[in-house]
Image 1: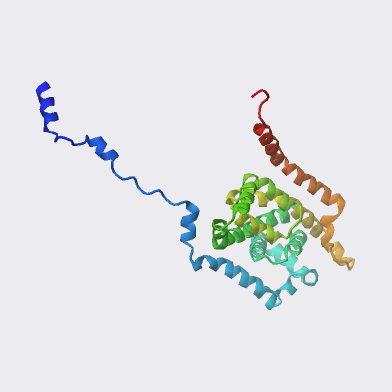
Image 2: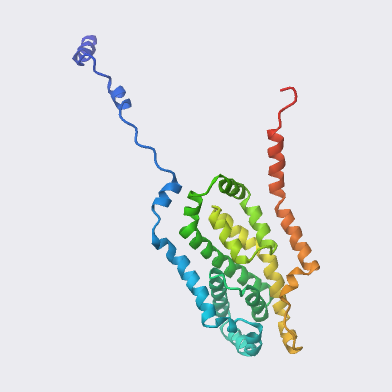
Length: 280
């Protein structure tokens, strides 16, 4: 047996490398490109189609004067027909309302307050709040995905250092910042729908932040709609600025402040961890 092993060793040509050494000398595969680079290279004009459709729909809404049909005057004029429609079709009417709300949100039409109040009038405060939150979240997510696909990846790939730092800071606390932007009406709704798409906010975080953040405002406007019949009978129209009244705005701002607690905690902990220890 010893002789067999020796013959096997002798049979290997002089200077030949062991089999495992030959494998180690094989060239390593080229490193894969970063995902952002791959996506940027794969950009095609087709990515713009969803965003172009949304923009065209926004223009068509005003060109054909469709905004005349989304007003308190139109709601007052057709309220009997609308309440009869809801009474007859029930859940189907609610589903149609959710779809209309989602489309109007995706197209960024300035109809959110009117539709929410109309929902409260037709379905009641709590059901309307649920329908509005679902419709607005679906529509906002559609716009978010369209913007991210068309422009978000390309903009982030070309962003400078300052933009990248802002992007990282927003991503690290995305849910908290989104809740603040949704709770307090600091910016137009469509702006808050678009900015996270350009800052690389994850889809799940965006959906959760949107759905939770719009609940208080939706409930306020839906409750106004629940009493809309009495206003119409008195010859009055609802006040869209009700959300800015102190007894309503202050609690909402309080919720926004609470949502920033995780951000403050991270900053404090980060500062403590960055401080040098005494005597070190």
